[in-house]
Figure (cartoon, rainbow, N blue to C red):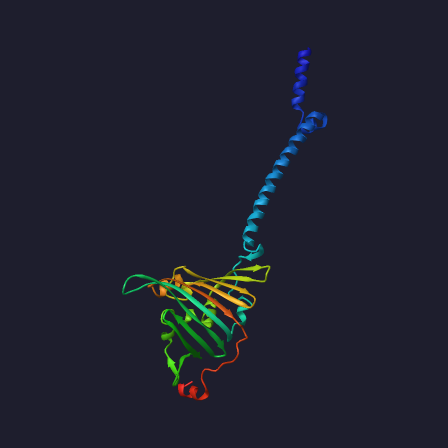
Amino acid sequence: MKKNKKQADIQKEKDLSFVEKMKTDKKYSAKVQLIGYGVFVVVLIIYLNLSSMGSNTMQGNNVINNVSGNEGSSENTEQVSASDKSSLLEKVNDNYSYDMVIDIKRKNIETNQEEDFDLRYRGKAYGNQLEINKEIVNGSELYYKVDNNYYRKSDTGVEFVKEDVIYDIIGSEYIEVNNILKLLDKASLDHVTDYSSGKKEYVYHLMVKDVIVSYQKDDMVEIEIEEENGVLKLDIDYTNLFRVVDDSILECELEGTITSIGEVEEFVVLEDSEESASGE
């Protein structure tokens, strides 16, 4: 009889519901609560680790440390309209000084040898007049541009010069500041980096097919612009573009500086009599 009673008690205990056990059995209740708390702690740790990883990833994308000066900067990687130009770049109109250095690697058609050389164009702009000092290995030549015509001064006066005499390797559309601004109008502003010092860096992407309509591949030209203390620095890698325009050019990179924005004093290239003689 006792054995049957014990078996009945065990069966009765098994038949009790979870809720009833929690109410009637303190040891069972404490055990369940301990297990539940342990599970909660494990889940919480996993959640915090995942959140921390996500935060570090976001921080890696949006914050840059300047190694040279521990200068914090934030980067907006959202693509925006190219019309949102640098505030200083918008002031570049018809009064500035410039210095453009073009590093070129090309294949000599006659010798079939690769050659490296630099071109340098520097000068200033005032109104419709542009001073162009072209420097090459053999020396330098001083030219001027008034409206859309080019000139050179000599002992006998001012003489007309063809454009391709000045820009014999790389066209003016890739060197003159106003033409570079036109290229930026076709580009998309990829991101801007702001530094605590006030310096800003802009990165543009210019699709080659937006310049060469017949070209349909997705190659692009990257244009970097740095703005600091009233100075603009340009870094343009034209390589992908010139592989289409001129396949003898293997690499082409322009590094330029624009200064004295709005500060250039007036200068005159053509006097009134010379303008009349040139047909201006």
